Length: 276
Ligand code: KMH
Ligand code: ZN
Image 1 (cartoon, protein in one colour):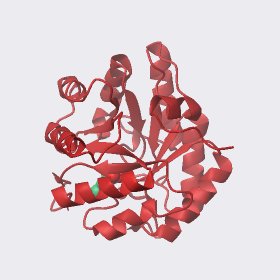
Image 2 (image 1 turned 90 degrees about the vertical axis):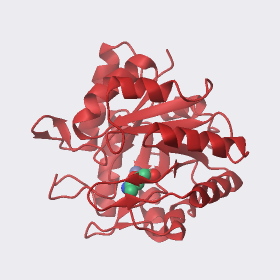
Image 3 (image 1 turned 30 degrees about the vertical axis):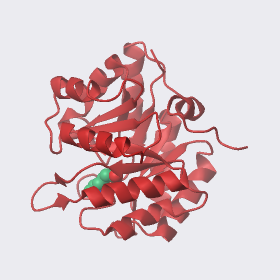
Image 4 (image 1 turned 120 degrees about the vertical axis):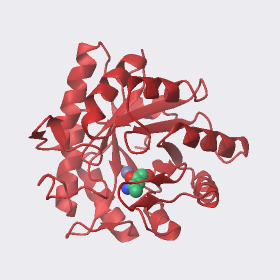
């Protein structure tokens, strides 16, 4: 089976220090969390950034500062800026994270609108999705197609038919936000994408470990991190993103799957190797 790519979503836009004091806000904290995940075996860092008080931002300057600082301690890791940001941000604001130097290799492309808890709606209209896809294609950024339910896979495939995406496609199934998060759900998602596409999955909160284990067994790739889950196990807060990644590495070992380095992850994802 292909080696396992572990993506660490170290920060997110919604979780807070009140929920887990180890959630990073400052540049130093974000770097600390990225390094802990990388040292534990993460090949990809899915990146949101915050101001020091925890407010989520897509500020180009803040992204540049964080990416430069992460690069110093995780020289070859794949950094994947979020273009989702936080619910309520404008498209222009959200796209600032792709406007850094060097141009990101990888970034998220959210493929539909979804309920985000309470009154929050994460809006991605057909126009937004196509505009983001076009910009990423022009800039040579590989999109990770973020899908929160099966309908969003269908939207992504329509956008693909219009020629706005490069092949092979890569999906991230985020289960447990809008769609439920059972192994049946995972199988529906994994069997609804083109055969040559790669995929990552994440189960939110209490669904994290079942989805991670099933994904490893099915040949997909795993995303974990504070953005999706703050607990190492029921009632035990994770001390770092590294602890969450370590648990995935242990699961992979138990199930006989090797973990990919960043260079191997670039190969699996058809991202060109880092220039030396
Ligand atoms: N924070 C969510 C509203 C992404 O990174 O592209 C959007 C999100 C998806 O996290
Ligand atoms: Zn995100």
